[in-house]
Image (cartoon, rainbow, N blue to C red; front, side, top):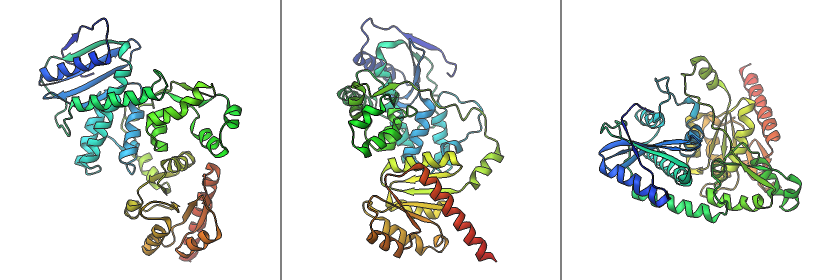
Amino acid sequence: MTESVLNVLPLEHEFSVATLTKNIKAIIQTQTNGYIHLKTITGEQWWLDFRVGRLLWAGGGQHRFRRWQRLLRTHCPDLPPDEVRLRESEVFDHWEYVALSVLVRRQQMTREIAIAIIQATLTEVLFDICQAVSNITQIAHSMDHQARLSEPMAILSSTALFYRVRTELQSWQNAELNEASPNLAPVIMDAERLKQCTQPRTYQILKRLLHGTRSLRELSQITGHEVSSLGCMISAYVDRGMVILHRIDDLPNPYATPAPKAPLKAAQKLPLIFCIDDSPQVGYLIEEALRPAGYRCISIQDSIQALAQIIRHKPSLIFLDLVMPVANGYEICKQIRRVKTFRKTPIVILTGNDGIVDRMRAKAVGATDFMPKPVDPVKVIEMVRYQLANAEKTNEENLR
């Protein structure tokens, strides 16, 4: 924490979400600028920065770096989190906010995206604070009126934020996961029973997703389901003992020291793979398969933005969904092939309906190969290696 004079607030015997909300609002409305620091009996801590009676930023919690990287991937998928660097070697408690300001100044991120990340962060942190209300042992606030955040990008209403948090808390309670946190990770405990009581395709999806290394919030991002809806679906398996929820550690701090320049340059030379599919789950599965194998990946759900992103990043290979809203795979493939730079770029069509008509039509617009859905991680790697090797061989032959 930044050094500052703190005023510790005495806690009432019966401390509820309503009392917590009232206390936080009272602090930020009676002081011009400052921050609030909260601690729990388990050692968890958060901080809320405010200005002129409104919230600016929130940080801390169990999954500080998981939350930061997840929200970056959600709102700014073409910006790899490990490339976000500041000159400071120390990661202070509002480091992420400063990083957002720097990214906006560098024009690597729009102000609208930065504000969306700020609002999502505030909502998640307040949700976690409210969930842990019975374990809170200290609420302290700064007594000086010096604002720590010198460049406010968005000053959000605490009333609106707490209303949103209460709504999400109610939805979470309706998921019947009791006091379980969305930061917990589901893992399959009885695979045989789960296989017997689910459809084959559903079981394969659950098997790939519920391996105990991703929190419910991360799975929400991957699947595109609201976290409360996802919790409701999983709760049935939890109640029957086929799935359990367990605590996972935060990601290691990747920003403690500046990254060496040489590895960053080397990383830029790794083949870049695009996945254009309106399903976040498909993009996630392809990324999870390819990143450990040494490839960079960008997943795009908006088919309208696909061509612009391809021209900007110049991928080595493109996975392209055949059926998407607004612009389908045929149209996008045809647009890509019209650009001279990408006439030889491998384009692999993803389809759940691998019929002869689809194959003929896709070949006619320039598709290189096909891959059935649901995607198999092993086959994804094999396809990428095969297609890139073929492309390299073709390039060498053309140079002779």
